[in-house]
Image (tube, rainbow, N blue to C red; front, side, top):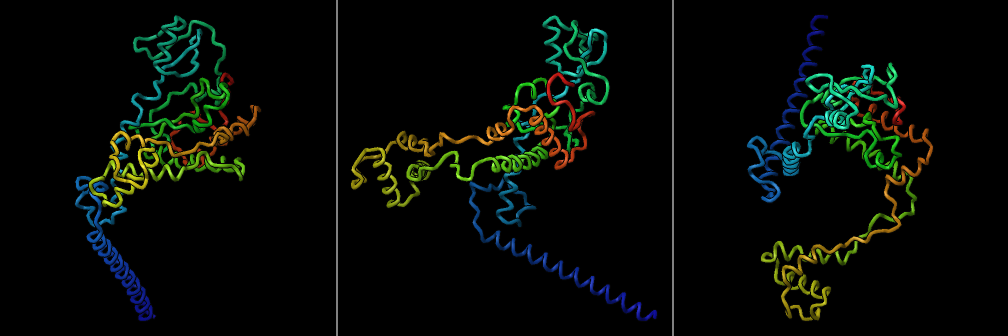
Length: 350
């Protein structure tokens, strides 16, 4: 019994060791393959420069290196795309009786004071008290908790506190077409994301937008624009002549110049050497619009909003669906206190 158990353990151990050795050999073979392939492939210096590649990445295949360079370029532009000022200032706004109504931005607080309809109640300008009776009051309870709570300037998905970007839960392409009462003085559906979360969420959101618009677009509808193949080819010829004229074979240079001259009406197409194209003429050919716009094309956002009609309930459910989509697909863990799918959808009802 003991001997059979020992043999069983030895067999299982040997099997595990064999799997490990085979996996290691495969990994080494793959790395060697990519290393040899990388040495054989001549990567264009314009695409991948030595200063963009670390020594540790020398064995990666070219397509991986290109993605690494693209990622570094994206990261270098994060600060340019990020918000320059915090989204939330958490200035407390009180009614004439001193009851908290909501939190607002510093800019909005200064506006109330400048207009003479509000005053600061402390030296830090962190609280504004209204000098008039507001039209709408926030009823105490969960419905107004979001408006009254302080909000942290952090990514609602991962909690990152740097390089924030505004993210529209209801896509801005749709939101801007909604009636004013669904967007005026309503910041509930504008949240903060870091760069990485913004890219991921934007991609998923765009996929859903594409699906919605494809469902509403007639199957026989024409695209937004069509390409004039002749003009597109002439533009490529002009680009080639401008960027690499000295490197083109003589036959190609003569062919490209002849086609452009014939299009511009500068010569007889049979006599390709009758005149020399100027840089201005080539540049004008490059700037030629080779796309034919479809005047009957309806943009996708317009299709979606028109399909909703004028019913407030239909539009409200549309907004709730986008809120559910945001929660179900991105799983935000740091949403402001009181953020909810069922929060007020129309201005002045919260």
